Image (cartoon, rainbow, N blue to C red; front, side):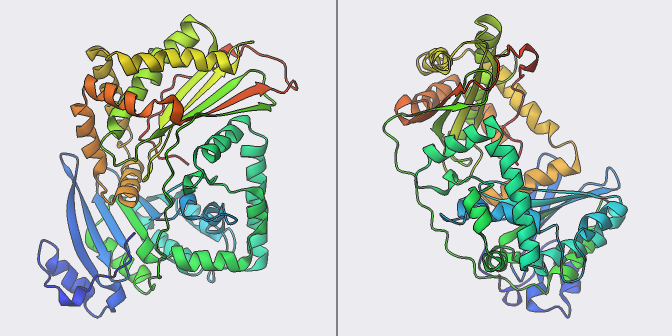
Length: 481
């Protein structure tokens, strides 16, 4: 997080935007002054221009005039990892509160006003971040920035507003976790895998914490984390850089920075014994979720483990899908995903059984394939196919201004580099079969994994569910919500 404010007045302004910035900064307060921080290559032909206001707000602009549309995303460096025991879920609660009443607009006016202007909005919260997303016609940029700055600084947080959104979130938890088998399994997996680190907190929060938040809790959180020096704006599309900066200065330049707390990260102690939890749920067949400790997104091993996952679970022709679903016919769903987080997290695997097959049988069948990649190198054909699939998924995600903005904002807030995605593409190309052997032996270790075995509780009849097989086509580069 950027906590220090740049001393803009003491620097000699040079570079391609010196003249523009001199004009824009004339008669501005120190907090509103803009400085050009860097020009960053974003692929072979595009450039991200990063500017920083005196109050610490980072503004990342990619000019793409292919169509008269713009995407504005505001990423805050706060997620469930920053919460403490007893106060889980407040980052997600704010995702809801931010669409409510402000000092200048009524509840619901934010969405309604932007929809009338032809825009669409959304938001997401996860372990490392919270972000707000607006796709809009180019002519609605000024309106969008005004409304976004308004809710960053003038959100109304009183008992009625907080109580209303707490009940909305409580109902969401009931639907997505308490009454959803897959959601409940994922929550248990992360809780059992992380005994110290904040990644063990459910993003939606524990129910007692959600219901226990006070208005004072919310005000304190808002004043601390919803500040310009904890935010990065990604603005992509048919824009003029000078116009964007002027609008940002006009709307955000008066916002003061906050004093961000020192992040008290508690590293997860090494796990030396397998943790195996057996539960029953209202499910027609057995399920199993497995979490192996995995490297952080910025770690050297992360691209290699991602490609190994693609070979194992990526699509109908992957090893596990072909064997367990098509040949052995003991599963209806197989998935794997390498966590894309700032700190070491989980490589989590999910399997759903066919018919009367058990979670134990699924786990034993999977172990055969995991043992094999720890002892035998994959073929060059498999490796090249995995590289092609992952690269295609990455590039397809950049076809729209929204996709570009999402990658810029995500990598800026997690790794501090808005173009890190292209470094990852280069890293994928360098991975060898030997690298896959190395990461398999390092991370696919039974003594450091957590296994959640789920058996039917008898409330549902068994169903073959032949029509619900999954392709496993998801890319790890997609930002999770």
